[in-house]
Image (cartoon, rainbow, N blue to C red; front, side):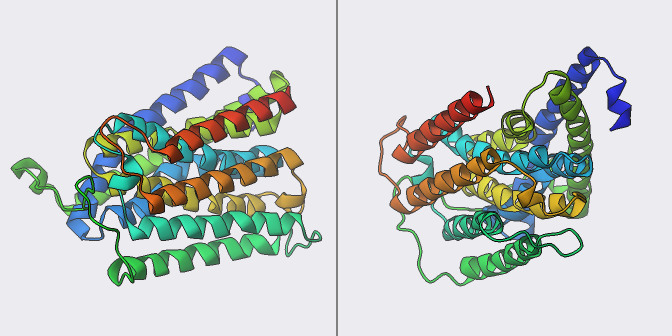
Length: 348
């Protein structure tokens, strides 16, 4: 924290936007690698999107939350996590606009993504349990923070079971895009799977470093400009650290990797709930959930509402002609726009 205080506001701003640019371009590269690894490993786009791509693109965000919590900025740490979930969900609506062949949620039908969305709803409910129960902590950590990673791991294990031994399958239509391995050219085949994983890891480290810069600069800028940490976390750091999800989603859709696009968002959102556990561990002044403001929990409710709309869209699968977006995408855009307006008004 101390290294940022002595820097000028102009330098801090340049560092913030410079780190955002790094996140943007690293996100471009990491999507292509995830798609190739999905084909090489045979795990499929939905699972790779939910686990590998979701974790990689969330790394900068978790660094922001941990760093903020260590600095005692509970609201910034919390709102960065849940605000990012809401922002990333609306990115699917943006991707639906760019996919001109059919409704994205219709074409990307995948049971694994529906199931992961339900797991995400459960994970988002856990912080509300902490809010509505007495403040209890173990080593200054609320019990809910121990439960979140357990539910996350159980969700991953059962998600693979759902994919490998599904009890139902989505009806195939002319617009449905199945997850089939892409053919690699000679140059691509010459790269070993191990090398692909190493490159992927290097890009993850780069995203993590950028997240550390954003956390440091955003915290000081929030103090100097007298802006609410909740507003900065939910609408500044959350959006910037979510840039990889926007880039990877649109890139995946343009490559025809629709399950990867949807799985990356839902998986990234699921992984983002682990930010809360990490932040509570890093926050040493007691339970993180009882140190924040009611406005921070507003974003939990918003994320849950948006996730329910997304799941409904994946199940309903509206049949729409080329160039038309689904009703769930319109609803997501309206919900997020309304949430931003409410947050700006309250913080103002």
